[in-house]
Amino acid sequence: MIQVLTGNHSAAYAALLSNVEVVSAYPITPQTQIVEKIAEFVETGKLKARYVRVESEHSAMAVCIGASSAGARTFTATSSQGLLYMSEMVYWASAARLPIVMPVVCRTLAPPWNIWNEHTDMLLVRDYGWIQFFAESNQEVLDTIVQAYKIAEDERILLPVMVGLDAFTLSHTSEPVDVPEMDLVKKFLPPRANVPYVLDPSNPFTLGNLAYPSHHMKLKFMQHTAMENARKVVLEVDDEWYKIFGRCYSLLDNFMCDDAKVIILTIGSSAGDAKEAAKYLRKRGIAAGVLRVRLINPFPAKEVSDILSKVEAVAVVDRNLSPGNGGIILEKVKSSLYSLKNRPFIKGYLAGLGGKDITVEDYIKIFEKTLESYRKGDSDMEWFSINLEATSL
Image 1 (cartoon, rainbow, N blue to C red):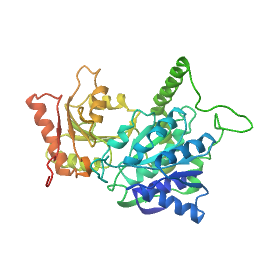
Image 2 (image 1 turned 90 degrees about the vertical axis):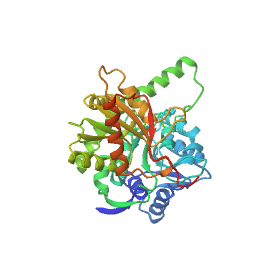
Image 3 (image 1 turned 180 degrees about the horizontal axis):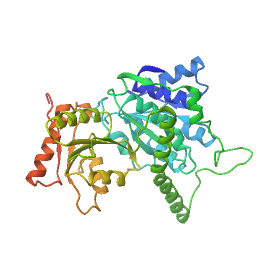
Image 4 (image 1 turned 120 degrees about the vertical axis):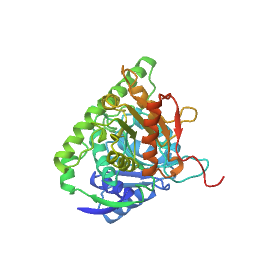
């Protein structure tokens, strides 16, 4: 059924369709609507789940860890400072190999206080061992969260998953979303079963015990192997989703990249504006394309390098800032291209921090500036900011 949904309500419907059994969360702008809608589903009986109200985000993840350890399908959601507050438990969930799914409504970190969009919060925990997606649309939010349970619960993976959606641009903006039939989703995602290492009073064992160095290192490499396996499993799950529901996303969104000479690589919802800019430049005879990375962790390095190896120039647009280093995605892209003999010219740009608009016109300027720098033979080791000026300061 087609419904007009915000990104937040799309996430809530995804939890409903996934038949989650335990939900625990703490409200934070701009995520609150997700768990409010789920609370409504639970109260009206649409969702047969245990909804646990807690005093903090740290406790919300702790509840999910306990419930997942007992074999339940669990769900929470957060944003910005909330993700930082639950940080200890976020790392624990991955190291304990628990298939928890959590949408993160990406918002700027304080100070100064700001409730608008930025990706620094979710990228800050990129090394915590969670699989990470960034969605472009509300439809992708819903579909990816349901897919995430199938990925996380796969015995080759058993890792938690974050699904990033941009604050307000997606979270509070409505668009038509195809909400699949529950019976079809149940065929795609049956109840969690045959769960290894479930806490059971009749068969007790220790979870999270002390490990000596040799065992610790082995466990970490097992976690790493599972993360490496995720690329393959993501593709398998996405292919199965396509066969049932007719929508697919893959690891990357390739928009007119096959014959492109210059490409903008970015993540999140503003990729749509980059695509409009590329279409405009195509009409002017410039072979422009857009590569949106959907799967951020594990980063699809080979797939990215295969596409970018065929172009002259690449502009990486980051909606995040690692102080002293620049854009986080830029560093990942440079690392991916390191082994290429003839790597393309790469220019990094910072844009949209704190929710500042990134317009189609901005992306046109980025395309043009990148081509100009490439033709002039400028250094590609620098990065630039777009629309840095404040209205008043």
